[in-house]
Amino acid sequence: MAKDLGVGIIGCGNISTTYFSLSPLFRGLKVLACADLNRSAAELRAEEYGVKAQSIEELLQNDEIDVVVNLTIPAAHFSVSKSILEAGKHVYSEKPLVLTLQEGEELRRLAQAKNLSVGCAPDTFLGGSHQLARQYIDDGKVGRITSGTCHVMSPGMEMWHPNPGFFFLEGGGPILDLGPYYVANLINLIGPVKRVGALTSMANPTRTVTSQPLNGQVIPVETPTNIHALLEFVNGATITLSASWDVWSHRHANMELYGTEGSIYVPDPNFFGGVVDASGRDKDIKPLETWDHPFGIANQESPQGARANYRTAGLADMAIALTEGRDARCSLDRSLHGIDVMTSILKSGEEGRFIELTTTCTQPAALGIEEARSLLR
Ligand SMILES: NC(=O)c1ccc[n+]([C@@H]2O[C@H](COP(=O)([O-])OP(=O)(O)OC[C@H]3O[C@@H](n4cnc5c(N)ncnc54)[C@H](O)[C@@H]3O)[C@@H](O)[C@H]2O)c1
Image (cartoon, rainbow, N blue to C red; front, side, top):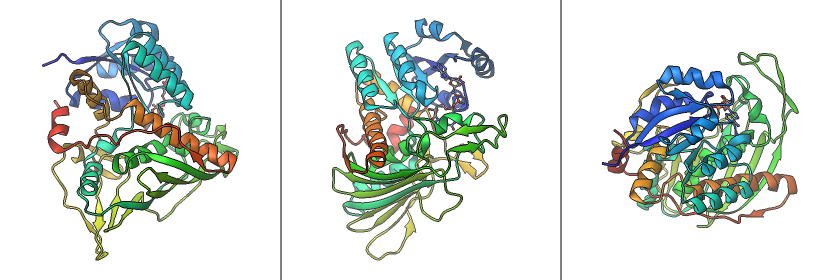
C-alpha cells in the first residue's frame, strides 16, 4: 500500500480541531505539523493533538509534508494557498476556495505548472444522506429534476463564534460562508449552473457580538447578509436559494427538489446525515429507507443530538485520487464553479441583472458504500 501523505495544517482556529480529531479516521493521511500567524494558537493545537508546531515558513519547507490544509480565514485563503503551491505542495482549503474567479484561475495555472492538486471543502455532500439522495435521483425515482428551493437562514454568527468579525467582511456573508454547502450539494445532485440572478441586502450596518470573549464588541457589516437568488442549471432546473443572517425564525426546509415523477426532501447539506424524505406522484411523503453508508453513521454528540461528522473525507478522497491518478470529488474545478455561482449571485445583487457563468464542471462521481468504506482506516 502507498505510504500515507504527510499533512500540514495552516490556520489553527475553531475548525482546526475538527480536522485534527477526524483525520485519523481516514486512510492515506497523517497530520504531522501545524502553523498559524499566531504562534500560540499553533502551539496549543500541537500540544493537544501530538503534532509539531512550526512557523509557516518551516512548515512550507518541511520535506515530510506533501499536502497542506488551509484553515485560515477566507480573506487569506488565496495568498496562503498560493504560497503552499509555490512551496511545491498540494493544497486542500476550507471554503470558500478564493474570493474571486481570477484568484482561482491563478491557483489553477500555478497548480498545473507545478503538477500539483488543489482541493476544497465542503465535503459534506459525501455524507450518507446526500449520497442516498444522489442514488435516488440517479435511479430516476423522482424523474428529471425541474425545480426546487433551498433555504439557509438564521440570526447570524456573532452569538456563537469566538471571533466572528470575518463573517461580515468581504468573503464572508451567508452566501460565501454557507452557500458552498448548498451549491456543492446541488452540483452533486443536479450538475453545473448556467446563470444566476439575485436580490441582496443587509438589515444592519453593524452587529454586536454576544459570544465570548468579544461580548459587546461592535463589528462592521461590509457584505450582504440577506440574499434571494435564482439559479438556472445546465439541465434546465430552476432553483430558489435564500441565504440570510437576518432571520430569527422561519419554517422553510433546507432543500426540496421537485422532479417530473415526484419530490425529494434533502437534509441540511452542512451536515453528513439526516433523514431524506421523498414522494411520488401519489404525494405520499415518506422517509427513504436508510442504507448502511459509513458517512451517515452518527459518531458525535451535539446539542441537537447524535450526528454524523466525517469532515476530512474530501481530503482523504483527494489523497487516494492522487495515488490512483483519478479525479478528486472536492476538486478545484467544482469549487471554482461554486465560487463563480456565489460571486455572480453577489454581482447580480449589485448590478440588478442576470449573470451568465463563465465556468462549468462535471458532477462528482457518486460515492457508494464500498468506496466510502475504502476511505476509512
Ligand atoms: N468554524 C467553523 O465551524 C467552520 C466550519 C466550516 C468551515 N469553516 C471555515 O474554516 C475557515 C476557518 O474558520 P475558523 O472558524 O477556524 O476561523 P478562526 O478565526 O477560528 O481561525 C482562523 C485561524 O487562521 C489564522 N490565520 C489567519 N490568517 C492567517 C494567515 N495569513 N496565515 C496563517 N494563519 C492565519 C488565525 O490566526 C486563526 O488562528 C474559514 O474559511 C471558515 O469558513 C469554519
